[in-house]
Amino acid sequence: MEQFILFVNNNAVLASAWAAIVVMIIFTTVKIKMSPIKQLSAQELTFLVNRKEGLVVDVRGEKEFKASHILDAKHLPSEKVTNNDFASLENHKDKPIIVVCTAGITASKVANQLLKAGFSQVNLLKGGMNAWVNASMPVAKK
Image (tube, rainbow, N blue to C red; front, side):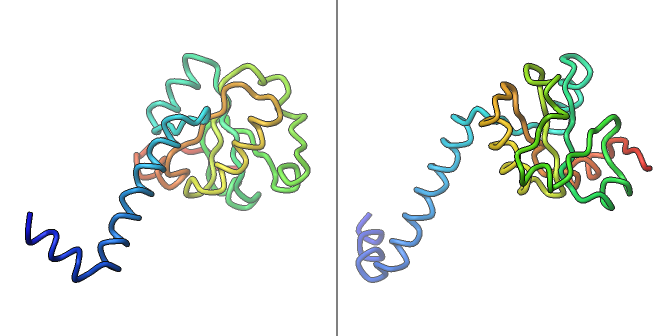
């Protein structure tokens, strides 16, 4: 314990950085657990689509979507997202919606917009299409 205190005293900046990182990890973990938007694995996505009539919404670019996408996914172009135009999804307001992008980063912004627009069951595919492909799940090509 004495060595730890001595280390902290001699390396205050380094110890502060480590403490800040630990606090940020705890904060992020709690925020994810408390969020109404859940992050799903590829298997959980499959369960929602097959058992609960979930809808996969792909927010990647048109070219990426046509190259490969999750079976029965609905493409939501970026201009509709920018304008908060979710009219094409109105019939699915009370059903699970799973938002998918390339790596799972862009999808969180769209998921928040959907939640604000009144969609009750908004989810994300953790890791996006990269995770889906890495899990050897099927894709459709147009």
